[in-house]
Length: 326
Image (cartoon, rainbow, N blue to C red):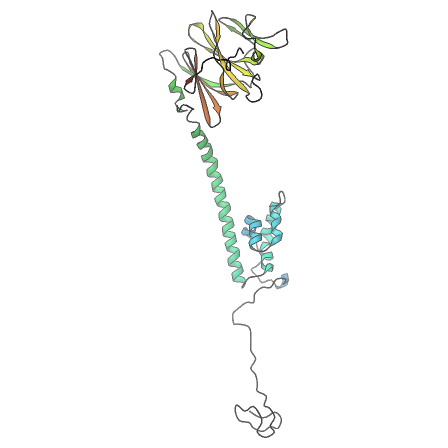
């Protein structure tokens, strides 16, 4: 080492020149702060021209998870995906531009770190959407089947599919089945029965009533709301006519039913029954008629057997509340 002032040679490690006494200037090696092979952390605000290759591209995570992805990547404008109607358009925009916005938001160690995180977002997005799609298909198949299973029993535990079996099989009889709907077009306003012509007739007071050969069946408040729904032929020329009583019970119950039991000598009626539903299914074998009416949580079963009405296993007796003549 030589003194830069006087040129004299100085000893190694000396701080001052032995000839002139001036301090010796030691050469300091340049220090590099960059580590070999490392990439600088991306800083927010850098321009697109400085954006590295491999950042731009489609993002399934941003498209499928949109606002969730936006929160996780601090891309707050992506929260617009929550807004109805425009949300889908925002999701498409995030799919195209989301990676670039996430890169600008900063916080990435390097490009590899950024790509790993975005790839995980895409995997989660595809996985969740695929799981929801499969769940929707399975639900569409299983829920109707489950609802059908719930309808397989009526209130007294009789299997719905075995409903036909509760009707007694007698020689020479066959099972008839179908549907009825009192809200649809009712039976003809005039029916020729063994007791005479059953007809809905307008009275002097302007109200309609069911009459047999001109004689009103009932004169109570419910009479103006009654009309025939279906006629069932029975043995020895008798008939069982399913009647609806609609409107007379107020808005709380749309429809109740009863049977008119008609033969050549007399016309009688059963008590009112029903679940307030206007439609259902029927089965008939011989003189026994079975009805199914929907109700909350299942189906109600009504049997007409030997002139008696049995509702969900319980025989209904005529009283003031269920009398069609009231």
